[in-house]
Amino acid sequence: MNRTPAPPEAPAGDSWEDLVTSALLGTDRRTPSGWDPRREAPVALLDAAAVETVRRRAGLRPARAAARPEPAAADPRPPLPPAAARRLSMLLADRPGSGSGGRRGSAPDLMELLPQWLALANSRGFAPPPQLLPALLDAARGRTDLRPAALTFAGPRALWLARLRQDWRFALRAAPGGGAALPDLDDRERMTRLWQEGLFAERVALLAAVRVRQPATARELLSTTWATERAEDRLMFLDSLRTGLDAADEPFLEQALTDRSRNVRSTAAELLSALPGSALAGRMAARAGSCVALDRTRSEPAIVVEAPHECDAEMERDGVVPKAPAGRGERSWWLGQLVEAAPLGTWSRVLGGRTPEEAVALPVTDDWQGELHAAWCRAAVRQRDPAWSRALLGSPSAPEAGGPGAVSLAERAKLLTTLGAAERAEWVARFIATHGLSEAFQLLGVCAVLWSEPLGRAVVDALNIARDAGSYPWSFSGVMGLAERCLDPAEAARLDGLTSVPDEQENASPGAGGYWAESFQRLTTTLRLRATMSAELMAPTTAT
Image (cartoon, rainbow, N blue to C red; front, side):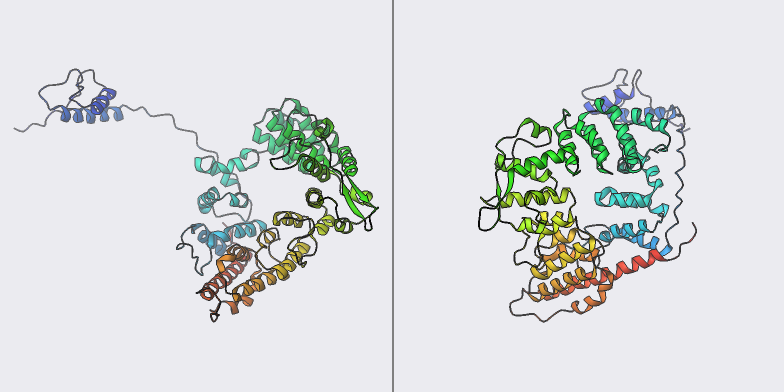
């Protein structure tokens, strides 16, 4: 009669840890006590491990069930139109790097269209389909430039999901107060308690929110705990005063000039210099005015400069950094800081009532012109003065590539940001018409989207000229990428004539015509796709 063999038993006094140790060291080196010598040791070890595994699983005590998460907050926004929802799914499904090598072909880069799609959807107040939120959060996790628009579009449900998965915690860090709800700003008691007891992210969010609606209240909150805050926290809190900065902030900022942190002092001085009527601005104007004067003894008036010979304690208190960077002279370093912080209205008085254009046109003696004009550029950007920016930019059609005070593309781009969108676009269009696209990339980057018609036409004309010159299109890949995102889709019909392969000229680069045709084909396809995306977001919505 056949009998079922009894299950193997682990040696007496054995444990899971003993079995693991024997398996790691080998049964030849370590045999647990109580082992049956009649059985083959490795086989007996595996049998015992199997029995012990069953015992461990059978003896597991059930844990207390975790609390169910609270439901996500309701999203009152209307749902996307069906076609727009399908389009979003397609954009999120596209992955960077799916092309072949460096060639992009004529197909649009869908991932590059996602930022514009999100901006359109946010401007029209739509809510995302819930099933696409994970893909939207994954896209925002991989691209920091997408995060603000993506999280705005994702809404409260994205924060709810972010609390449940570690990979999406960036959404909580990006949200005001780490995703926590802020109290009603009219509830002074709760607001004060959160300011005094809240987490750092909650306090930053509270201060920013209060500053937008009640600037004086935000300043009062900050003053109540200022003396006990850490230096790095004081610096971040002080930066919030940029919003709604006005003369009422001056006493608090003057007090911050004596802070023990150099970075806090420097930020306070920068904010005060942006208030032309502040006492600090007056002190800087007096110092800068004593260094720069109008010399009328020459046949033609000129600016004469006498840079400071020392940086005293009062200058340091007002934010002047005494130690110059490597390779920079101390006197020119101090002069630049004084001129940059002085109100631009100072120079009409110092230079005999001259306008900004007339002041910039004056010759400057002893090779100080570059230093003086560069400081005026920084002052124009800091004080958001369009008149001085125009003077320093000069005419975009001038023979030289830059204006009288703009010594780099980066400086010209910063000066352009102080002008209105239409004026900025017109200036860049005229610059491109004169100088082409080789230096225009940074300037185009500060122009508002969509590009105006004159700017769009100037870019297309310059690309056409570059094609006729026989160069390769990837020399202008940055401009072409901007055109795909910023050119008005109405320009697509005008580009159709550029999508064919032109006859190859004698001095042209081999195959350049075909590459240009491919690039223009991609541009026109992208523009038409953008027009379709916009129309889809205008379609009627359906109920969820």
